[in-house]
Length: 207
Image (spheres, rainbow, N blue to C red):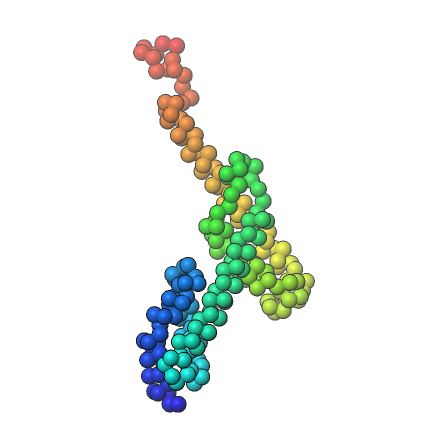
C-alpha cells in the first residue's frame, strides 16, 4: 500500500468512526478530556498499524474498539497510580499540631509541593508510586544508578516532599488564624489601636 493510499484510507476511517470511538471512551471514562486522549491514542496506534486495518468498513470499528479498550485500560492504570501516589504522600505527611481541620493536605497542595521539587526527585517518587518498582535495585536500574545511590535518592526525595508539605500546612494554618483573629476583632468592635483602654476614648480623655 502506498503512503497516499494509506493516508486516504486512514482519513476515511477517522471520519467514519471517530465519533463512535469517542462514545466508547466516554462510557468508560467520566473525564471528557481523558476520553479525547483515548481517541487520540487509538487513532495514533491505528495509523502506526494501518497496514493491519481491515479493508471492510464493518470490520474497522471492532478493530478500533480493541485498540481503544487498551487505551482505556492504560488510562485507568495511570489513574490508579496517581491515586496511589496521593494516598502515599498523604500518609507520609507529618501532622501539624493544630486543629484537626488544619491537618488535611489538599491534592492541590500535594501537586504544588511536587512541582517545587527537582525533576529527579519527582521522577523518583513517580517511579515508586506509579510504576510500583519493588526495591532499590529495580529503581536504580530505571534511573541508571546503583541500588545504594537509589536508596539515598528515595530518602532525600521523600524528606524534601515532606518538608514542602509541612511548610505549606504551617503557612495555611497561620493564614487561617490571622483571618479568624480579624473576624473576631471586627465582631467585638476591636479597632487597630486595640492596645488602648476604653478610657482613652472617653470625652476629655478621662481615665
